[in-house]
Amino acid sequence: MNVFITGISGCVGHYVFDALAENPDLHLYLLVRDPARLRFDPHRPNVTLVTGDARNLSSQADLLATMDAIVHIAAGWGESAAYEVNREATFAMLDMADPARLTKLILFSTASVLDSENQLLDAAGTDGTDYIKSKYLCLRDLPSHPLADRVITLFPTLVFGGDAKHPSSHLNGGLGDALKWAGIARWLRLEASFHFVHGRDIAQVVQHVLLNDVSDRRMVLGNPETTIAEMLESLATHAGKPYRGWIDLTPLLELVALLFKSRMNAWDRFCMRYRFFRYRVVSPETFGMTSAYPTLKDILRAAEG
Image 1 (tube, rainbow, N blue to C red):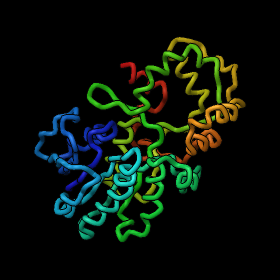
Image 2: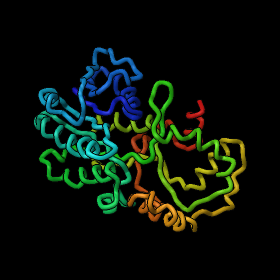
Image 3: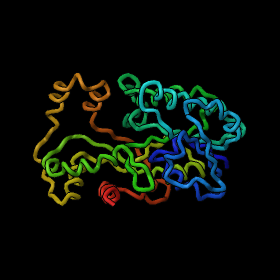
Image 4: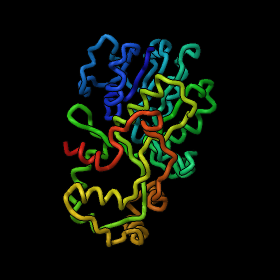
């Protein structure tokens, strides 16, 4: 199976490489702008490096026509790059693929564009940042494409991951600072919740979806819902301090929004009102596998290591 993969040099991309590279039935074509960013050795019989950019795929048209599957992990985070990578590149790869050969395109999106019923969230299209809005527009427009039935969209929730062999996610990079504030944070609580997932668990799901027939075309990747209080308790416990949670910050959110109005964008203000990011999630357990990092305590131990 020929598999074209974008975004391989990032945190999730490295874990996906770990999950797929040992399979001799797969030949991986890795689109990279700078091979020096790779923390693994790509010199394998079943791996081909393709130097290029997801914002300009025209030079890869002939190659994409030979692909059996595509895994689009790459993301653009702001301004024009967000729309070029998150939306336009998705449609370009579908246009260049051979309809008689391509079986699936595994598309990475973000859970932020969905509501609690896993349906598109209108606010993502009106108030979202360039990153959020571009992901929203891609999903809104995908049903009109002739190969839309080949697309399986994965929606990671908050992503952790990273070590000496894997680049850190944005969240993992901030865990050290969060632990420094554990002594103060253990007195606080806030009415809000979220889901999280580790890059290694994302890779397990990608591997399963790539190699098996799945009926669900949209999957939100995450562990069970975690409250902010539970997160703060995990931080405090990991730092060796008892969690108290006596000071409720929830009533102060409106004041914070007012005081920092000039520094907050529309999406920040929406998130402060929304607060409970709940989804119908899947994890490796959904497919009979075992999550590598099912709890925040596991995440913290791994980050410390």
